[in-house]
Image (tube, rainbow, N blue to C red; front, side, top):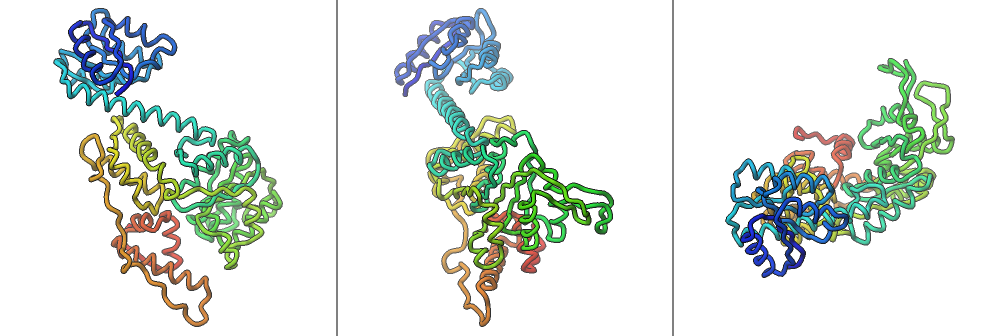
Length: 461
């Protein structure tokens, strides 16, 4: 072990005994006898960075130890503080933790408890420093949620930084659950349009008969239910960014209207005659292979090249497994912070097992799993035994390719195969749409659209 530890206690015997215990473990130790000395030692600019942790007595001759703790936190000192007292009770322990202490130990101090608590406190401090370093890294890309130190993520952050500073249209590609919306928002925040609106349209979630009104708005009386004029998403995004999510799921008719709006810089509301000038930056995203869709005739080539001025690909989690521990810790910390509780930690074997898992739903699936582990696991440490084994059909249960029927096109064969895969996944998940979407690596809205397309009915969600 290494690090410098400060002990603040008015009892010489405690300072000597605790100091000797820590020194025997390889720590450097300094001691002070009063709260004023501790404050003077730690609040001096740059001094707190010299220490790894503080053992702080509650009953000091010149001050209340918890008041000292408050002043340290108010002064920006973030090192872990372990409060000690010979007159401890549950109420004092709770107050100490609420005021920012890592833990509370009662005197007489247990050698094993002291060393274990200090070790865990230093581990948590390392995690917080690691998190801050990550935030500094991803701040260049404009969104602290784009966590990762892998080469793939470093490249993504740099791509976002470069593209964000421009006015060019961007096409974001990547598997479902990789964080394409986060990338779109990061592009907006790092752009000259950051103070303007960010407006999202999900092509897979809006029925075909409503998409034109949703995008371009409508005038009163243009159709049943149109009781007043209404701005569409395109107008709402004027001066900002319009995010066309799941662009590959939009129909050829909608694609044509989007292309025309991009080319002209003007739109017309449904049922209206007046054209409206707009100043909108387009960022689009898809988890589909648009090049293959162009070959199949289901996506417009001219629209593709209008959208893909700057292509950005978001890597799947399998391409950056080294980021899994960072993401898992981040999600656990964020969840517990919302609940006002100390974050659970992962034992090394648990992180190794997580890193080796198959995450078909990518980061979204990992986030859901971590939330489940935090809520359902016993104790403050998540172990390898808590991590579920990979589920899914074995080789014999996987859908087999069927023969192409006479006269069947490639697109028809692909649709037939996709329908079989969805039906089998629904059967495996006993009709639960949410779990089926996670199993297939799809958004629930995308799966619902496919269920409607293929006429598949389910009575469970």
